[in-house]
Image 1 (cartoon, rainbow, N blue to C red):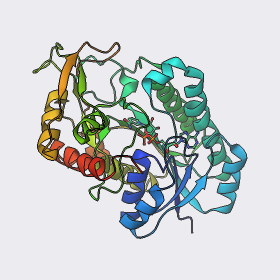
Image 2 (image 1 turned 45 degrees about the vertical axis):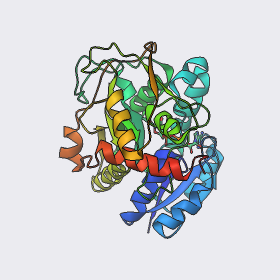
Image 3 (image 1 turned 30 degrees about the vertical axis):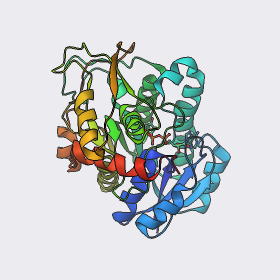
Image 4 (image 1 turned 90 degrees about the vertical axis):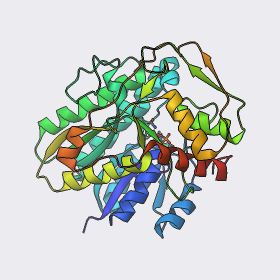
Length: 338
Ligand SMILES: NC(=O)c1ccc[n+]([C@@H]2O[C@H](COP(=O)([O-])OP(=O)(O)OC[C@H]3O[C@@H](n4cnc5c(N)ncnc54)[C@H](O)[C@@H]3O)[C@@H](O)[C@H]2O)c1
């Protein structure tokens, strides 16, 4: 009986929440993570939430010999591949690092899967593959023109996996394009803990609310949006986690499949809406100033989630208020992270 779901990057933010959703759906996650952006302490938290901690294999997804050993020794029915680097700015400074980790890492993994006869793969892609869209909501058929090495690394992997799918029968591959994951598990035991200064809005806002940072600088207040601030499609990380379970279940039921699916809410929220929702959730003020626009930022975009609903039967259910309440529970209970 092939029973593990190998979760690369499973100690990280989205991966750890997906381990919770997998366990709740009756799957057994097996984590492979080099802990370059996460902590093994997450395992105790996962044990408290799910009743048992997933096993962790500490190692790198680019280590082919390790992957061959894992596939030879462990019964793995499918892989969810989160392991990768995700800071857009860093990818501009060190593109080779990003291409090595994200593209090469995915190729080594896919080759090891092929050799082992494991052909079900759910891949973490990103809405950054769309770059600046012509319109929102963005359907999966929109042109892809990523504006930075991070986004290009995701698109390259999508294309490689599409070619792999077409090269031989039996592959079931889901390319999941996430919009903006935020929030935390409702227990407050796991969440996002960026190292250094956060690049994303929600961790920044929570750090200001908890007092770790003095104020939020909003990047741009003169965009052509209702309140002048940038608009994004924020999706609760537990909804996203459940989207992976839906994609896995769907893939495993097909003889073969190649799916490209947006995971978002289909609704855009502005920076100021998020800040106000966070103030309500935390009962704390979030001091802010409006700064200049950040080069490369798109004024507004949100995803079209229709395909995810139709094909996977998945829809984001949690509201912006829940996203903020859960982020606050995690941040206020764990101001230093794990
Ligand atoms: N968080 C977002 O906003 C977002 C949006 C779209 C897509 N994604 C993608 O989703 C995936 C997960 O993102 P996250 O937010 O959970 O990030 P994260 O950094 O919290 O998790 C990634 C995990 O992968 C591990 N890792 C990195 N390189 C590795 C390697 N070579 N071998 C083994 N482990 C490795 C890290 O230690 C970490 O635990 C990434 O691929 C990211 O690009 C994230």
